[in-house]
Amino acid sequence: MNPKEYRFLKDWAYLGAEENALMQLDLIGTDIASGGMRATLRDLARFGEMMLNDGYYNGQKIIPKHIIREIKKGGNRKYLAESNHSHLSGFSYHNQWWVSHDQFGGYSARGKFDQRIYIAPKADTVIVKLSSYQFPSSKETNAFQAIIEYLEKQ
Image (tube, rainbow, N blue to C red; front, side, top):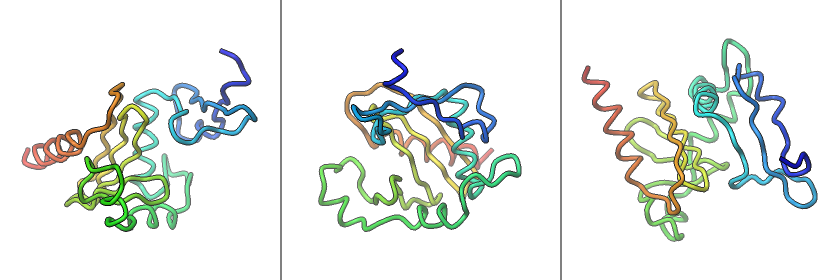
């Protein structure tokens, strides 16, 4: 790996991450924010848990609570409905997060190849999915909701 192509995320350690996360850089050394991050499933789950807990992980504040509150509000659903994201019916996009407006208050980080960190605050649940699909789908969101519904019945 060429060290000029990737930057280690030093702050990742605050989450108790087991592995370094990497960010891909553009030609002038700026992080590529739409598909250049690499991390393990377990460390992504830690990140999701921190989001679920309003920015705290292991009793340590990582992200201010007001930022998490702002993300959960979501954006204008009409704008997303009019975009080329027809597979995300009912969703909105706000502050780099996809907000599902579902019964669980769900919101997701979504990767370029349909990876997901799905946070469901009302169900106290985080689901992480790694994948390499070429095209995104809404099927996983429905599956996440079905998993949560099943677990709540147990």
